[in-house]
Length: 581
Image 1 (cartoon, rainbow, N blue to C red):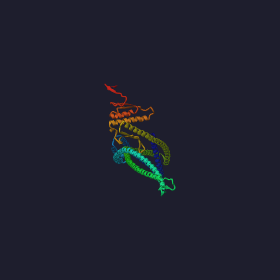
Image 2: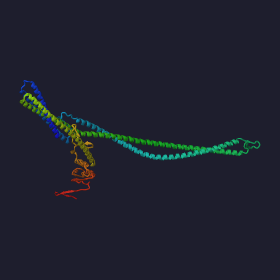
Image 3: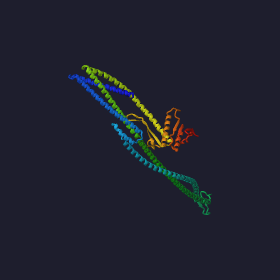
């Protein structure tokens, strides 16, 4: 601030000196022209200078009037600023705030106000559409959940039936496998037996063929009718005949046994075929059951996917609704941020105009001094000496102007450095403040949840306006189910007590988190802030307080200390207080 004042003084000084230089240059030019006009008298020249003085004084008068007008408008803007601050901190509805701001807008002729009513209307329409979509999504979700529950129940029931079938299948499959193993053994035994009988049949058949061939070569004696073989006279034909008949009976017996074994084999193979057919039927039933089980599982999986997709869509719509609600809630802050930006810009514009007018007034005043000095010199000096004197004065004033410009440049440089430092500090301070504000909001909401409140607090911290100025304003919104639930004064005493307690606990925790170890606040004193809370609320609040691990002193006129291990009752009788039992 001292540098700004020094800069303003330097600017006024420089403006005055520049005014003197301009006027001296004008006077020198006129004196040189006057020297060419030989018929012009000194009185006429003085009259011309006095007329210039009168014009400058008129310029000064008009400048003062202009400054007064600017200052009047500046006061009106400052009053509007104060009114805006009161309006923002009050409980006035947003519609009324917009109407009052609209009445103030003539104070800001160059401002372009956002169509907040249009934005609010459009956002509310989007919100209404989203809410309708959320309702439809809720209906779809409930239907999908019912379908999932039904399909899951069917699946569970079918799994029980499938388990029973599996037991039956395992039992029947085991029996069929045992019987198939038995038939396999029997078939292998029968095949071995048939092969053995066929081997015997081949041996017997070979013997029969051999005997038949021998007996076919027998010769009968015509005298004694004795049969014999010429090649083997000693061979007993009758014994051979008996042996042939015996072997033929053996062959017939073997063929019969082979036929019996083959019939038995066919019967066993038919039994095996039936067993395999039954087993295939059983496997087909198992495949059918598994397909049905897979169908139930697939139906449950598809329905679950449908439920998840509906839930995701529900979450997206809900998130969109929350974003729209937050947007609507933030409009109030944006409205005031924009209007305060108009105020700052108008303040800067008017201050700049006032400064420029004052510089022009200063320049005119210095020009008047220069003109008056010229009149004095004109009365005292000859014309040639006057031009010389004016030129000498011009050199002196120019030198002073350069010195003043140098001082102003130095002040400007120093001021710019400080302004950069201030801007960086403001940004850093804003960052620190918003960080703590965010932490305070989070901790407060944690305590509100712990003490059983459905209210949540949202803090909006410092913001940077379009003009670059930082609004060090903390806006507080009280939310229920994500919706703004009005000002704090509209809450019941019990709800207000919960919010108060949560805020106190959050502040204490935030303070302790910024203290060195062992230097935090261990003692918390609550003096009659829980009177309006019901018993259920007190129970949850005491539970939260007991979980803090610190020392809590609760002062109350009611019996609210049942959740604490220590209680001190103060009894007041006959204007005296004593400790009760």
